[in-house]
Length: 471
Image 1 (spheres, one colour):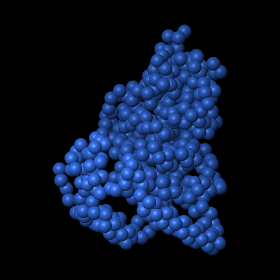
Image 2 (cartoon, helix red, strand yellow; image 1 turned 90 degrees about the horizontal axis):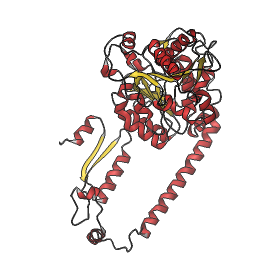
Image 3 (cartoon, helix red, strand yellow; image 1 turned 90 degrees about the vertical axis):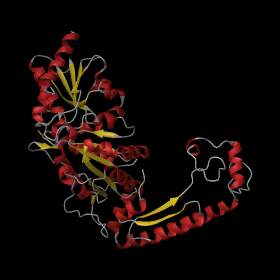
Image 4 (cartoon, rainbow, N blue to C red; image 1 turned 180 degrees about the horizontal axis):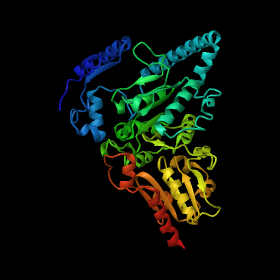
């Protein structure tokens, strides 16, 4: 396989330098200077190099990549490179001089920036405070005011659409909130209204257009977070999360506050069929250490998962939202949505001594609630737990976790429209999990839930079996 890298990046509109002799320090230095001088576009420097350069017996060979050179070959390489210093790892004094000069330049530039910022603060105190807050990772006072009472009385609404309303409320209070989608902004509902668009020569906007480049999108968001001064979000369909998984993993490794939005989160996608219906993706994302995955049950929980993500400074968050409309849970008969902040909470129960616990996430919480109420009508005391984030729940104290999922109560059923592998952590070996065992199909969402038997009656049936087996 071969390609003309220079022409590829020229087609992208980049500033292309080279190919140059990558082993020539002066040529590399000159190329770097030319790249710095180009301020209107990104630069790429194409270097022709030799792997294992300097090693008489391994230069240009694949073995130089993964195998140690060995003491003898290192000695030969030093001779060939005319390295006149003794010891296995010696830093020449000249290098120390260059390091000192770099430190001096940095101190001077920092002093210059601090002076300019002081002048800016005097002239624009409000804007300076916003910038200072953003750079220090502080949310502005009162940023949550627009979230209060957002869905107290609302018709059924998809959580992707509820998220859009929440995002726009956040954007009004947090100027550092920016992001975009991989060419799916209308479908993922992630446009920040009246906030402008970022483009060439225009950086005052808040909406980014990444194009159909999921991996690059995730990497760019990581870079924005690393720079500081902004809270970035990305968006695409959940089934495409695989394309950006390496970037998500790096965001988690680096502990950066990036919010990855994935809509169309289950077979509820409907007619688009199995190619666009995520099955294994929720569990695959939950397996990434340091990543929080949040899947709210309705609009009220959507507010709370956003609240949690905005306050989480030490790592990234995945938001999983539905395409299909969901009823807004009536909180007058249920526990408050603030329980979301603990990852999992008791949504409803029919008595003080439950005989069975039903755990649901996202759109399937409604199925869990219907099943629990059905069982209560039959005289079986049921507890329904909404578990929007397993990771946040696992961070809670053992006392709290045991209060939600009592260790002595082994009759447990989980329901989620994805693979069931992994739910044994919460339902135990004696429990049951209702979900998907294969790929989806093309049909309306309601038809698919019936076809794959992800229904309240199926959940209730599993619960009856467990309760009767325990009695």
